[in-house]
Length: 311
Image 1: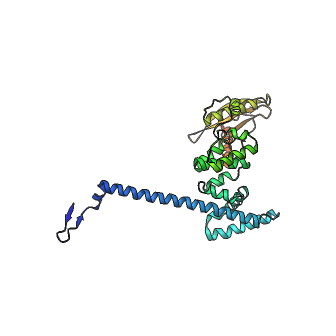
Image 2: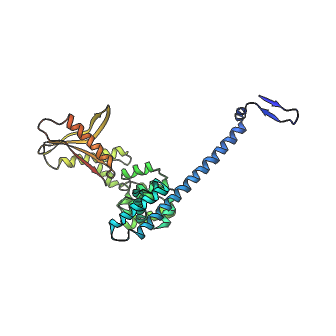
Image 3: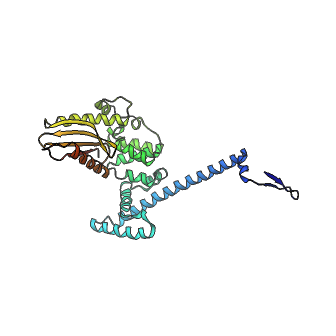
C-alpha cells in the first residue's frame, strides 16, 4: 500500500517487499549480485595465486638454506621446529607435512616464472596432486592440461588415477619431442593431436575401439591380468571376478579372487589404476576379514591380499 504526503509529495511505501516485484528492481538486484559474485571470484583467484607463490617461496628458502646440507636428520629437525613456531603464529597451513609439500614444490618446479603462470589457474590443492608425480614430463603434462581445460582438483585426481598421460600418444614419443609439445602448449595454449588422441597400440592390445569408458579400460586390463596370473602356473585357480561382498547391507566388489592350491588359501586381488593410497589397504583388510569368515574352508590358511597399483 502507498501513501502520498501532501506536504512534500513523498511516496511512502508501507510494504517495502512490494518494491522487489517490479521488473526494474529485479534487474537491478540481478546486476548487483553479478558484480558481487564476480568480485568474489577475482578475490578468490588472487588469494589462491598469492598462496601458491608464498608456499613456493617458503619451500625454496628452506630448500636452499637448510636442506642443501647433507645432514638429512638435521634438516628434518629444523623443519619440525619451523612448523611448530609457524603453526602457533599463523595456523594449520604450516604443518610439518605442508612444509615438506612446499619444499617438494620448489624442487620439482624450480622456475618461479612457470609457477607464477600456473598459479593463476591452479590452486595449492592442484599443486599437491601434481608435485609427487615422479616423472617431470608427466608433471608438466598434467599441470598444463589442468590449466588449459580448467580441471578442478577432483577431475585432476581422476585423470591421474586413470593414467591419462600414459594413454596419450604423446607419452610414447622421445623426451625431446614431449618437451617441445609441452612447450607449445605452455607458450601458445595450442593443443596438438598427440595430446588429444590416445595411443592406438595400447588400445589394440586391450581390444578396445576408439571410444571407450574408464570402466572399459579397467575391464580390459583386468582381463589381461587374469590371463597373466593363470599363466603363472597350475597352482593358481580362478575363483571369481567382481566377487560381491556384502557388509552391513552394503555391497562391495572384489576385482579378482583366486585359490592357490599349494598354499591352500584364497588370494584376493585388487587393481588400482593410480598410485597406492592408504585407504586401499583398509579396503583390502575389510575384504580379507569377510573372506576369512564366510569363504575360508576347513584346513585352509587365512586368505592373502594382493594390491596391484600402476604407481
